[in-house]
Length: 125
Image 1 (cartoon, one colour):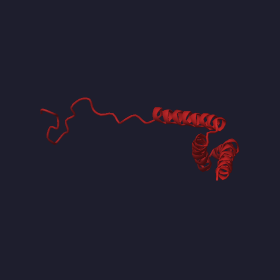
Image 2: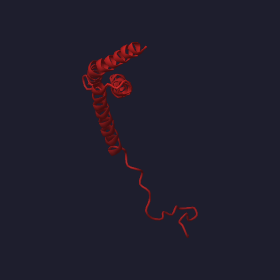
Image 3: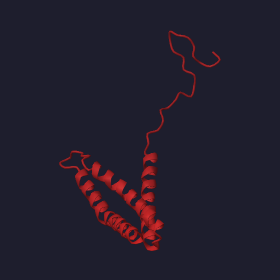
């Protein structure tokens, strides 16, 4: 039974590593190529590829860390742990960029504004 578990964990780790090293960069490249504007038109055709690359880029290292840590494979745990840390750093930078470029809140009047033809809506008025 232990040999079967070792074989399955080895297969999962190998598939995660191949997906992380080959599939994710290929999806990013495909997404970037599809997103390039052609003849001045903007295109969002590559968004699906980039979304899949993001999910796989975060999910595969997470699965790899869990499987390698539970089977006590230190080398694989380090490899997938570093990949997971890099994925978290990229996600944090993307989130910080989104927050920084968020539209400002709508301005509120800082003084009392009276409306003509109606009552006074000013506090204390």
